[in-house]
Amino acid sequence: MSDRKSGISNPWDVKGAVAPTEKSSRKIDLKDIDFDADLAVPGKYVIRGRLAAFDVTHVGVHQPGDALYILADLLMHLFRTEEGIARLSAAGVGVYIDDNSFNEPDEGEPVSKLEAEHAVVWFRGVGLDQGMLELARVLKEPFAATSAKQWGVTPMLVS
Image (tube, rainbow, N blue to C red):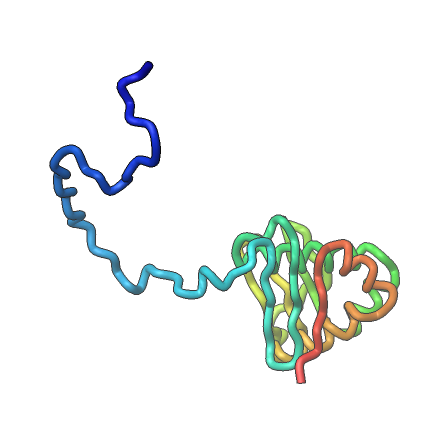
């Protein structure tokens, strides 16, 4: 037989002295803490405006710039169709992604834009909120709805 006692052991029964741990000298700056991190859903981000929003759900979304990149990629796909060129150009929407662009604004033309590191979505001649509203309306049309769903982009009109 073994020398161990049989039966239930007491986990609080300390056999030796416990040495105190060293205190950390590192200070935490409250500006560096993201208090909303526990509310974030991995792979999802909502691009919000006053009149419209875009819910982007994709495995590649880790930060806000990733969501804009997915939206810009969807717009680039739509610009490769005849109906997409017609509807997005009429709405004043333009896109730049990875050194490719469609419907670029002219020099000196007033534009509003959503911009990230590798992607830009701009709205020609209108404010950002109005441009996002026009884009949401275009993405809700039947020719674009299927592609938007495949890209994980849900356009929403805000009241």
